[in-house]
Image (cartoon, rainbow, N blue to C red; front, side, top):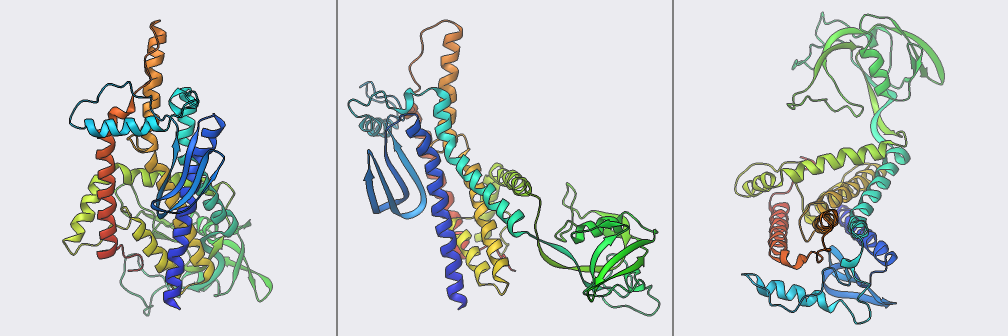
Length: 436
């Protein structure tokens, strides 16, 4: 059964990845067709063709390896002028020009990508990443506001009998240790906190905030016990404690150290549960994830070096480091096979899929060909040249011939393949230890 669940987790991510790639390419396809560009192919995956069907002028299909996708637009670059390419990479440049020329059919010379206004070209190229961003926002909104995030509820799980010093290794009360305010107030496991200091509370984070802000003050606390509301009086004491977020994780400063402050303390803990969040939380999560992924991309050379070093040493992989499709699938399988409630496992899998779409969004904005961001840069450069010529009342320059950048494109493509190979090997030989 565990093996079946593991495989089901992998299948979930493969289907989710194929869906994400398909929507990415639709983000390119729809505006391209709206702007009149001839689109010859819409393909999901690479390698041998599994299925395809031609509808109108476009062939739609699926290929064997769901590691990407593409649409084939007519005239991505200007038609070649017949002059032979020069330089070390002249064969590659010439091949790129020939392949581009083949997409420009007789009678469709005006339906080519490079003739579009600059803003339309940018809209087409940003359409793919935008679809990944929208899908991520939808996923995280469903998670946060539809299902809920794992946080402390208002139900008390445990009450500490005594106050233990911060940072102590002591895990049991000794004679003479002072009782906690919660124990003195007769708070019991199973009590549901209704209000504190006259303020209704909906989760444990709100309860904690009131307690921490009121050391030495006596607070009225109404709890639901055995179906009845019971009034208790509780007086938080001042202690040094590590500040935590709503999910119970320690807050850290810019240097990564835990934040310790003098706060009110009563000595009770809550049960964890899925708490629905305000509707805008999903968008906020998208922003936080995008910033985190962008940080990984900026530090990608260093992180890849560390991944390579982990293959020849006993060091563990960085849990916040890059992953290949193999690594994502492996984590999905482990999550699906864990001994946890089905809803909890589904939440983690959806979160992984949302993060994957954020990664696709950010990575495709890198301003290098063959990525979408590279095509945007070419369009902007073309627009800048045209604007400069217009400003000085000069004839409009010829469209930018991006086939000259084929050498850079090849270098980037080779680097991406090498990166993918390295990460796949690392995800097999030294995978990230998600569950220790």
